[in-house]
Length: 125
View 1 (spheres, rainbow, N blue to C red):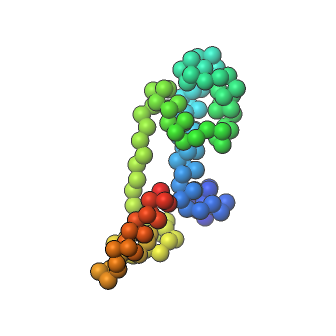
View 2 (spheres, rainbow, N blue to C red):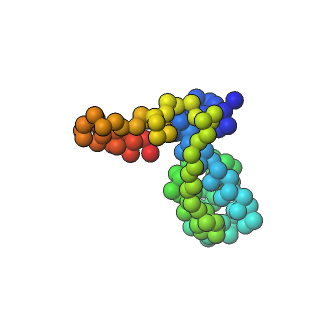
View 3 (tube, rainbow, N blue to C red):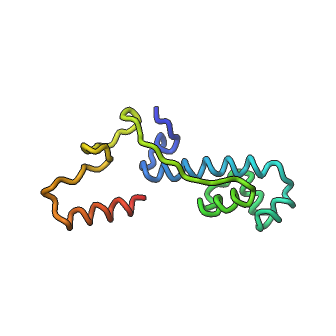
């Protein structure tokens, strides 16, 4: 059984990680917002009452990660992204010698191949 519900329903790993991050942040924002009235939230978050309602009703798809980060900051929450290495049992991907999910480059690879791999990794993030 997957530890991440988004992986369990078949999302790709990178999309699942982003959705989990967004979901976790949404929960914290709603919890912090629950201490305020809708009118107070309109002033604090600088948004309309329908948007406040969508936020509190869990309509996560209507909010970007960037918007949720802004809301969190306005509600007095400190936001950060922390990363840590996966344990071997938690990762199903193929790993190279260095532990990365992509094979580690060898000395025989050309500069063009390495640049292509770097570009692909940046696009995945």
